[in-house]
Length: 334
Image: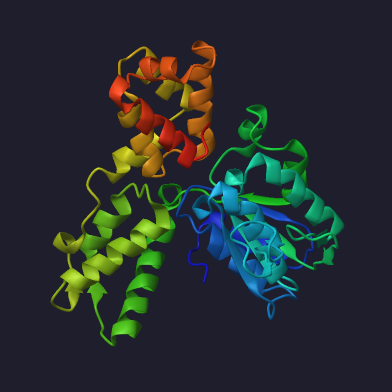
C-alpha cells in the first residue's frame, strides 16, 4: 500500500498507473528504504500480469560466481555443483514480473546477456544448446547514479537505455515530511491489528519523529514504530519510547560520499591500513565488490602488478600477506 498525500506520492501513483499498462521496462531509483520494491509490486498488482509470479532478484546478496546460474538456470552436470536441472529466476518469472533490486550490482559480463534476453525474449540455461522462450515484464531498481556508473565503465550504456524506458526517482523521506504522520498512523494501525491492541501516538512523539532526518527512510521509520510499540507499556506511545539508532545517520551520511579513490588515498597518503579502510566496510556491505576491485586495480598500477608491493602500499604487515591473498581469491578480487 502506497501511503502519503505529498506531490511526490501523487507523481508515483501516476507513474504506477502508466507503468502498469505498459509492456516496457521500468527503472525506479532512490536511496535504500524509500519503497522501490513496494512501487514495483504495485505496478505488477495493477497490471494484466497480476495473477502471474512476482520474482525478486536481490542482486547484492548473490555471489558473483553464482549470478549466471541464478538468473538463467543450468543443466545437470554443466558444472561441479550442478546436480540437477534448475530453472533460473527469469524463467521462474515467466508470464509474470521480475524485479531486479539494485541492478547496478549486476556483474558487467552478465549485463550483455541480460540485454539479449530482454530484447529476444529467450534465454539459454548454462550447459544447454537450445533456447527457451520467456514472457516476462522487467522492473529494475537502483540506489546509484547509473549514468555515473556508465562513465566509470561499470554499467553498459545500451542496457541503461533499454531498462529506463519508463523511469522515476523516489526522493528520501526527509524531503517529503508531510507523509510522515500518515505513515506513522499506517504502521501503528498495522501493529494494532496484528497484536489485537489499540495504541496511539502522543503529540510530542509525533513531533519528535517529524523533526528527525530518517537516513534509513521508510524502512527505518517502520522499525522505530515497531520498537516503540514494544517498549510502551500503556496505551500511549510517548516521546521517551521513540529511540533512534545511535550513529546511524552519521554512518549513512559518510557512505553517501564514499569513493574508491578517496579510500585509496586514505591508505596511500593518510596511513590507514587495508583492513580498516576497505575490508571492514566491504564486509559490512558499505562497499561492493566492484568498488573494492577498483581500489585493488589502482594499487596494482602503482606497484606494476606486484601483490607484495600492494601490501606495502596498503599498510598491510608482511606476516598478513597470505591472508590478504586468500581474501582476494575468496571474494574474486584478483
